[in-house]
Length: 277
Image (cartoon, rainbow, N blue to C red):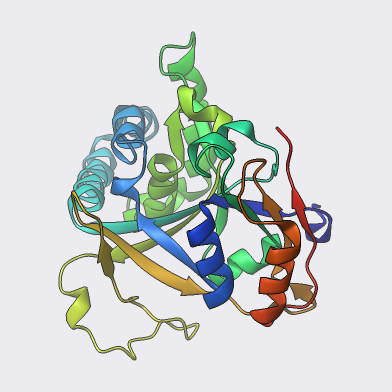
């Protein structure tokens, strides 16, 4: 079992965004279709859809195949056109040179080290996996993966095909092309249905008390990018939410100045250091 008190997860961003996160104790989850990878969601669906249908063909008699396949077709279309998916990205490595260059403006930004438990406040943290569809035996490997993922539900899939909904979404929301593997991404996903959600009452709640629909904001110069804002507390049970702040090697702010800002923001003393890459 992983000891969550032994490691952090890091969110890389530019200075202004990092200070806004720390001051407001809030993370922006961005529309997944507006990420730097233009094939988010599309790649996962294109990769797994034919494999899922093949797995259904191999594992069910004709009547059941028709029922389950029809549900999968509707689900894929719904998620592609109707569902809003919002994501925040993290990495367990504070010295990832690719992330410092790509997301922290060539080492001029900041990486915030959070305790992993705080992510429960945003959603579930999952590891992104990277695949090469041209790899030898790729199809066989992915069919085995799907089989492991869905076999526990086989007995009732014909009668309750919705039981595989989360499994389907995880397949195509957590799959990226191999060329992105240097990011070593851990990701939080929030799914929010698009039609009419802004018109629902603000007190609409899920069974666990969390809001069912979060307010959608827009920003962007060339195009609108939708995002939602999720707050975090100073502590999660016994754990401090923010456990380290790392400055890029070219960051213009001094460590002591960031440490003072954190105190001004109401945090307890938090280690601040500068990375050398």
